[in-house]
Image (cartoon, rainbow, N blue to C red; front, side, top):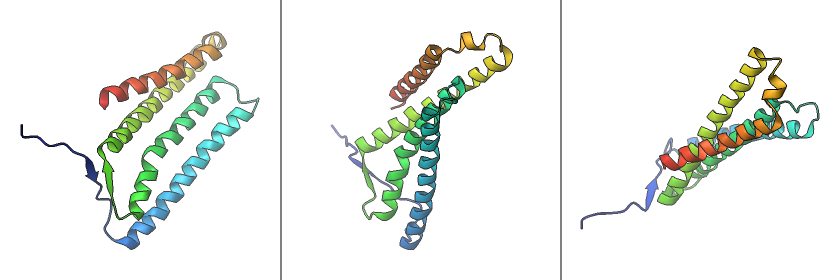
Length: 157
């Protein structure tokens, strides 16, 4: 039996220059903090405001939450690798990161699709909108988006 197993991957990164890596770390950290802050602000605003209780804001809240999760899958590891000498990732860590990227990425696409359907109903069937887009239906659509993302990521990893 002539076989071998992969235990870890070496991440080469963007550059070998330590000075450039520190600059890139700061740039990526700034963008990551802005992304987290903006999305968490949207989530907190929608959840705390009584005026923002329409299906559109319900979906926007979940979209922002998924975006926080999606950003947090790769960015922290990438920033850590910019500062660390050991740029290896275990096979299990790599598969977990791949699962997360597929899970949150596909969930985000499904939520965007649900948001498009919500706008379609609001524009094309305005008189039936409140009966078609109930809180229960919206919840089922979001749960279906999460389930679809999970099933997709299971198949892909």
